[in-house]
Amino acid sequence: MKQNQFEAQYRAEWLEFERLLQILADNKKEQRQDAQFASFPERYRRLCHQHALAHERGYSLPLIQQLNELIFQGHRQLYRHRLPIVGPLIRFILHDFPVAVREQKAWNLASGFVFVFAVVFMWVLVDQQPEMIYSLIDGNSVSGIENMYEPGAGFREDRDSSDDVTMFGYYIYNNIGIAFRTFASGLFFGVGAIVVELFNGAYFGAIAAHLINIGSHEPFFTFVVAHGAPELTAIALSGGSGMRLGWALLAPGPWPRRYALQRAAQLAMPVMYGAFGLLLIAAFVEAFWSPRQLEPTIKYSVGAASWILLYLYLLVAGRRNA
Image (cartoon, rainbow, N blue to C red; front, side, top):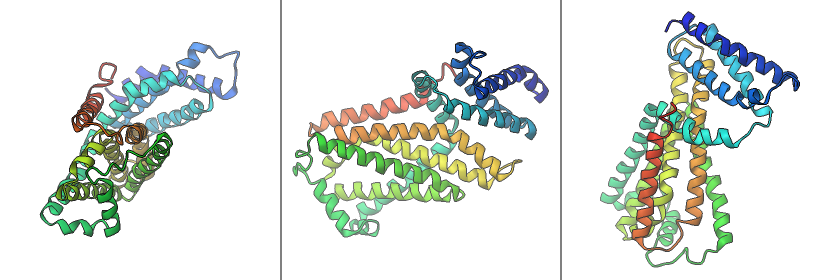
């Protein structure tokens, strides 16, 4: 579609969006209709989609900047007023997040590959040369991990509900911190995100191989298998978003780097919001389910269901309305 056809098709929507922005900015309640106000988030979403199309098709910079300004004003109004939260939240979960993940699939796959490579490399290395665990983890930390996952130690049986709540808060703080650092480090031209992914993958692979070497693999894998699905996936998505930021700086295309970075961040933020949501779920499972002393078959079955359902959701959800 040529740019003039694109503008002719959507100009009326843009003018209507500008009119609603003016009404909201002036607080003209007598001109506001509830139906219009309720439809504002959907109009804003459509505008973001049109902005993405304009960029993808290489339309002129003035048009893209015009749409970007409307998006900026719409964002301010969207979060200035108390809009119904349940509907947009459900739409984000069922449509916007999985669609954004698939749209960013190249970066997510690259991030996942880096993580898995580091896991496999360190796993094989420690399996073949057990002393290599100490090249990544200090001796005191290794001893603590061994004690934690010693078979039959029952280290989690003494935990009560208050301990679970405390650990829930700790896991939220720790996991979201890792995800944010992975994402933000992408500002170092993507190298930072890759380094963080390599370290996290190597750390996991080294611990797994070491615990297998000493016969403590079952307590470890039964503990991590369920919450590992949302947690590791969220870290990979954060890495993909960080790489996307880095690439915008390395190859901004016809735009100034500042604008290219801004656009990359806008496109990556739905993925990051969803990743933070996955980490909340992972923290809940890790605090309240993973410590439970149940038969390994049960723990592995729940873990397998977690992985399968999560990836079915990411691959399928939102396609009907896309």
